[in-house]
Image (cartoon, rainbow, N blue to C red):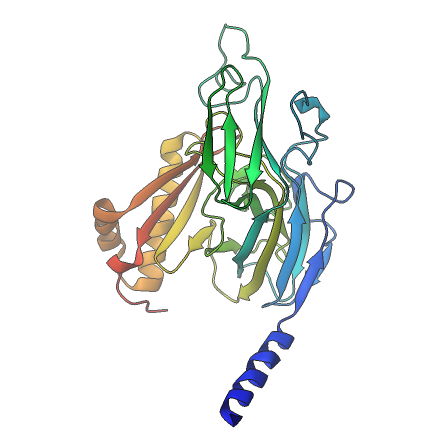
Length: 331
C-alpha cells in the first residue's frame, strides 16, 4: 500500500512539474511568413504547448458555394513560439503528442494555375486554366473518417483520417522571411504526413529561440498532393518542445520508434531525393557509426522515398530507413 502511494505521489509530482503553455490562434494574430518576429509565447526546453491552428483558408470556407476569394491569405500560422536556450547550431525538437481535427467539415479545392498536372506559372501551357472548384468533406469523428462527395455525380467514399501539420517550421537563416507556402531548409510548408502523432521532428535552429510556427492542418492527403490541397482542416494540437545543444543539422528530420527520416525540398524532384538521401547518409554515419559509403550502399537496398508534394514552390521528398537495419547508436 505504501509503495503504491509513493508511486502515485511520484507520478503526480512529475505531472505537476510538466509545464503546459496554452495559446489560441485567431485570424487576428496569425502570420503568413516564416521569419524572425516577436514571439507570441515563450517556453522552456521540455515544456508542452497546447494550441489550435486554422486551416489553410483561415477557416473561411465552410459550405458549398463558398469561394477561394473568401480566404484572407494562404496557410495562416500560429506562432512564433520562442524556446529558451535554443541558439544557432542547436537542434529544436518537436515531439507531436496529440492532433485532433477541430471541426465537422474539411475542404478540398482546386485553384487555377496551381496543381501537379495542369498549367502553372512554372509550367505554362496554351490552353485556358482549369476552373476553380471547391469540395466540402463532412467529418465523422466517431469513425475517424472524412467523406469525399463527387461534384459531377452522386459518388461518395469515406477516407480514413490521419491528421498532420502541413506547415511546421522555424525562422530561416540569414534574416530571410519566407512565405508560408514555401518549404525549404527551415521546414515550412512541407505537407509531410510524417508531421503526425507519434513522430518527433528535428529542426535546425537559425535564430535565438528557434521561433517555431505551426499551421495548415490536414486530415488526409494523397502522395504528391497533386491537385494542390489535402483535406484542409483546423487542428487542436499538443506538442512538446526541447533543445539539443550542439547538435547541428542542415535540414529537418523525423524520427519514431521504427525509423529515421530526412527531408529534401527543392526543384526538380530528383534534387529533392539527392538532398534527402545525402542527409540520411550523414545521419547514419554520424550517429550510427557506419561509414558514408556503407550507409550509401545500405540505403540502396532498404531505403524508402516518399513524395510528399509536387505543387509548392519547392517539391518535398522524405527519405527513410527502418531502425531494424541499423546498428546501435554511437552518439
